[in-house]
Image (cartoon, rainbow, N blue to C red):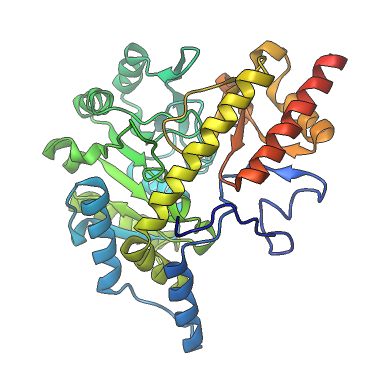
Length: 390
């Protein structure tokens, strides 16, 4: 392999949200960023821009749009146009702006829990009400309750549906059939889908990511997709993302909302990083996916063999394992605290992602294998101590 994902990089004292907010004796495997060094072409492009020495206001060059367009074409077999691309500072600010653009205070926004918790703030901060179409847990994976979904989108107060594809935290890559069924129901009931596709590139073999806007011309004209290189290439700190919206009337509304909230200009280094990531770093991603798949398989096998009280949900995408802890009969927030105290391991509590995440925890496996091995040993030790004292 060209890249060394086994290399352990010390991230302490770098203002790392993941590491520097965690006690030194605790291993952080919670927040969704990776412990791997960024692809060399990305680092080189940022260094080159740094050497210029002037970092004033930036415009978006043609190379930026070309890189986004070509990534969609080459990686996801879908042709987008420059006019559809709205650069922004992040997916969550984008979601907030979209809610503001299409909803008024008191309107409702549909989500599918358990789901990324910042969806909630994007909705509530704009004075809207959250409506949940709870995903159906089936022991090994999750499915959509379509009868409930249909009832929810019939409500005239529901203006938007925020989709997560691939889904965080349950790890599903929604099939074309599932997406079409949801999309048809939304169009029938005048509900706009805004799809958070930030994890679209972290999809494992045997699974295929389908952008909802690729399914039909009608979907393209009625739905919106948010993307970013941040999860794919570990660039969250560079605050760069894009909204893909073909409907130009929609785009005008979104642009106005983004401007009101000053969320429309990626920073100078984020621009360079996106261009180099989407143009020169596809080989890094290919190697990353092989490495992450090995991490996933190792973790699952270890749990099956050594911690039968836990059940790891089938991971189709993302580097975030969703783990059923219901056999321990301990609330997830309490369990997370106990794991941190007894095992010196920091993970995410499932209740963070909705009430139906109560019996789950989420663990980030995007780290060198040696770190993962240490993490699963700490988890094992903590669970043994919890069982002995419960």
